[in-house]
Amino acid sequence: MATYTVTGVRKEPSADRSHEHIEGVCTSTGTHYTRTQVVASIDAGNTWKTSADGYEATIEPIKYCPKPNCYATPYIKTKPDSTKKDNLENLDLC
Ligand SMILES: [Zn+2]
Image 1 (cartoon, rainbow, N blue to C red):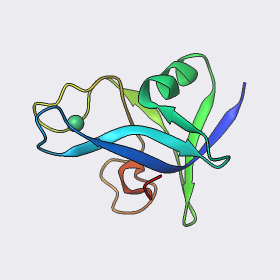
Image 2 (tube, protein in one colour; image 1 turned 30 degrees about the horizontal axis):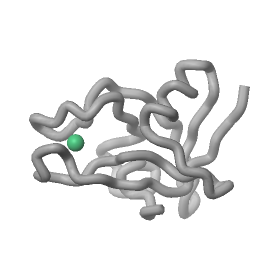
Image 3 (tube, helix red, strand yellow; image 1 turned 90 degrees about the vertical axis):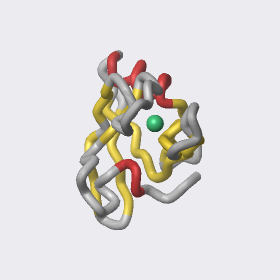
Image 4 (cartoon, rainbow, N blue to C red; image 1 turned 90 degrees about the horizontal axis):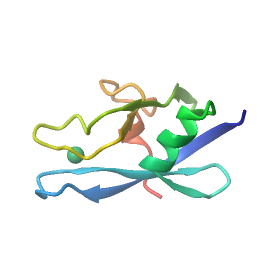
């Protein structure tokens, strides 16, 4: 099993354009993966974690984007309430 280190996120507008949410991630090797690819890899037993500005967190799959009335699925999170870079949503864009 492999461990992937995520250093950036790519965002996209939601279907109703009310917010931007995560489309995918970029790893320390500069490779882009979609949310679906990340979740499939986690389900296969691999570990995905973030590492930025000294903060690390483990990525977990969730069913839907947490914003109201958004059904983007699957979705991924780390520490959604954190204002630091252990929150996947706060990583630099890639
Ligand atoms: Zn959303």
